[in-house]
Length: 191
Image (cartoon, rainbow, N blue to C red; front, side, top):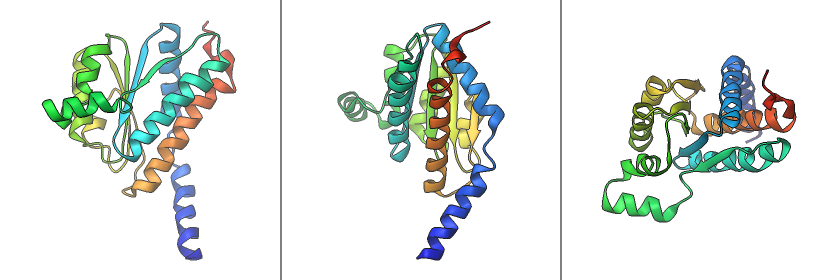
């Protein structure tokens, strides 16, 4: 078992070395712009990626906002169980996110998703709707990126087929993004 644990950690170290710093920096810039322009940020995912989405929104909306003079307007679309089950039951499960975006999103807002496969039909449908309706799309994926990487305007791909490793990296990157604001509040000052 100790050898297995060691191997898991070694793979994590290798993946850490492959994190695209320029892409993280670009996303921080996008979120800084959203903060400046009072744009909404909608985040969503499935399974463990839904949990990462909720965690990211909490850290961005609470912790990062507490460090700044303005507050992020951010929403985790996988939190509203009533909405998700109503749409899933009455329409289709693949509609659970885009139907919420229809009600709440405006052009210029941001849609962010976390997905290991990058191919979940509900996420792909939401991103197609978002892109067609003037939202900026950011996808955190694994494997080879899937359909989401083809649709998204900004993408971070963790090149692994191991769900645990990918979700670990996604959450770490989410923390990097949030702590960029928490530990560098001057980031919101635009020249």
